[in-house]
Amino acid sequence: MRVGVLTGGGDCPGLNAVIRGIVRKGVQEYGYHFTGFKDGWRGPLDGATVRLDIAAVRGILPRGGTVLGSSRTNPLKVTDGVRRIKENLAKHEVDALIAIGGEDTLGVAARMSDEYGVPCVGVPKTIDNDLSATDYTFGFDTAVGIATEAIDRLHTTAESHMRVLVVEVMGRHAGWIALHSGLAGGANVILIPEQRFDVDQVCAWVTSRFKASYAPIVVVAEGAMPQDGDMVLKDGTLDAFGHVRLSGVGEWLAKEIEKRTGKEARTTVLGHVQRGGTPSAFDRWLATRFGLHAIEAVRDGDFGKMVALRGTDIVRVSISEATAKLKTVDPALYAEAGVFFG
Ligand code: F6P
Image (cartoon, rainbow, N blue to C red; front, side, top):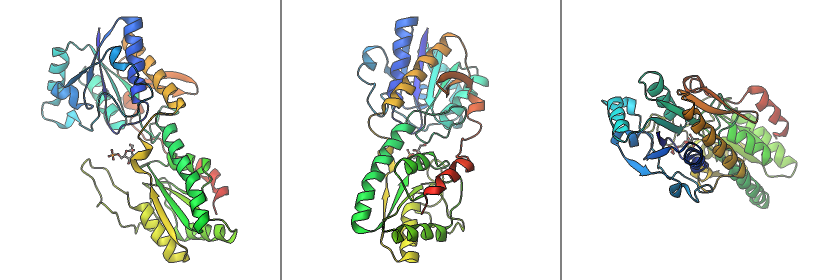
């Protein structure tokens, strides 16, 4: 048996731990051979491969990024994409494919498996934690840790100058990183994409914080939007991949706060720092277990399935069902954090 492995979409701490788990168990327990495909779905599309054996996965557990490379290539949007992939899999004698990725990469895996008969198993990945069907995705814990450390540091500089510090964190569609890091870091305002915010209310919280002689920290997810929707988008509305880009919200909000409260405000955009570097212990643990269970699914011939965390168990769910709907922050969960605002 030869198994192909690919990593698609944005990189995420823990990808290498998944790859290592797959290869170690596949070689040692099942005697399988592996072919790494380069740069997501571009690899099987172009027949671009990387050697993937025990030696290739030695020492990669704590390394960020992905040794296979990644891209957002969607072969279903390429003329003859499915035929080219099938030909390349046959050429490299690959019997099954493990796709590690977010909703786009896994969405392709679901269709490849269900509609085109390419045997695929999926592993969910995203720092945003917005994939339904799994309690957590690896990469999220690392991102929250990085954002929390940044918020801790920003408290002291905010207080030294008695300024407002606005911290923009990742999360285009879901506010999980903002909510978790905001609570862990003791933010005074947390803004998420799931609920449009009222700028005057934010200013009222900021003012009350100053009245208590503290400097406020505002955590805003990159996808958060003001109620009146009057935000000017920095990069236009859509990027090259068709994603809505809202990277200007932190800066925009700091300016509004300055204008409306008369207090000095600064913005820190954490950006890709949240995705880089070594995974946390939790993410290494989760990613490794996902890898072990993904190769087990291949051995069982259980294709069209994705591994997922439920409590402390790893289960298998249908990829197409898992990618059908994003997991967003529940309003009740967000309301819980409200006690700390202001
Ligand atoms: O999907 C994860 C994510 O980190 C989002 O939160 C963010 O908007 C996006 O990726 C940015 O990705 P890139 O800059 O690679 O397009």
